[in-house]
Length: 89
Image (cartoon, rainbow, N blue to C red; front, side, top):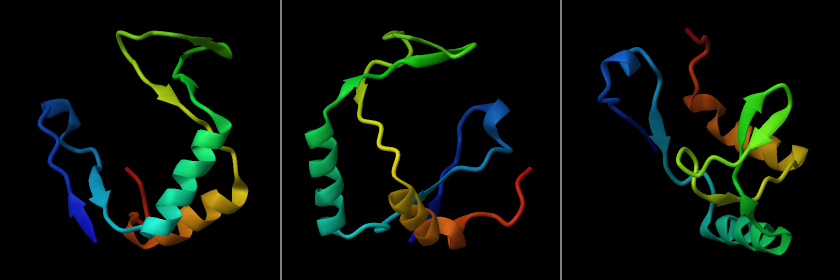
């Protein structure tokens, strides 16, 4: 199920925003959570250009686990593809 999101800021009025529900089953969600917990989390940094990353907790104050997995990305894209516009502005 897809639900459009209204963005309140004037400069964001022509931007695309929506929520998609139930892309993954509860079991799949649990598998992703377990995988991320096995790999561990680290403070989320900000790309400041030139290949440089900086910790900026006033902008992004969270931890994250980055997983580069082609099969996982393919599955995600296949499930959301029908919700995406054919062309982007």
